[in-house]
Image (spheres, rainbow, N blue to C red):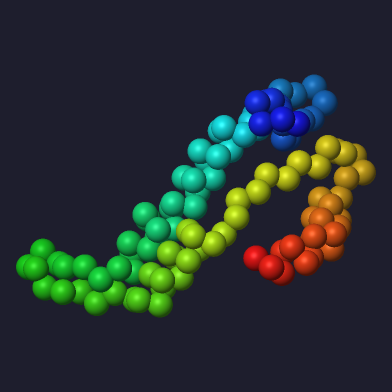
Length: 110
């Protein structure tokens, strides 16, 4: 699949019923979503732990370790999209396990 192609993916397909949760996967939309997902760590969750001031201007201590953890998550995590196309006999756990085994050296270098 090239970066310009769009892949229609469906979830929850049952005989005699509409598709419960259709979605479309394309590189551009994925990259936007990935950035939004990772930025939530630093722009939302980390703010809970950041030092701040109350209404009176008094300093409220933050939780530095938690704040730093959220920042590291934002900077170091990966977002992936995995599709298992065998709806009947598929085994997503096995697909992921085999991928990890095949690329273990590269993953260790990260």
